Image (cartoon, rainbow, N blue to C red):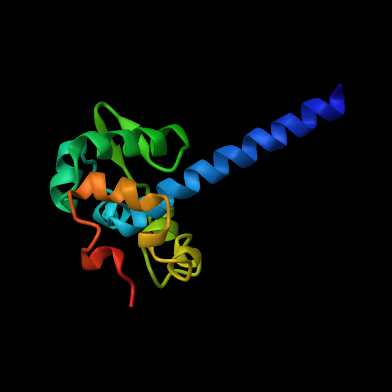
Length: 132
């Protein structure tokens, strides 16, 4: 039973990591992390306005990131701490996490495409989804 318990813990952790990877991809491609890089508190409405995205979806993205400890939450505002900003919003940082996704297939060929379309209201023909 101990081996099963250990395996289940590892498997659930792996699934959570895979799901959060999509949030990192969205945050990078939609500029959400960069818009929070100054570490100033923002509301979902402010972040959505800065990035021209849907407030509803930004709120869900912020809540998921806060639940995972990637973003801090306090009294209806969210903050990207400086350490996380270095890893998520600074392109030339040696700790920049989204870098591998930039060499992966373009968003137009990934499941994240539909999410980005709904968040931004862009068409599938937009240059945002075409990486030359």
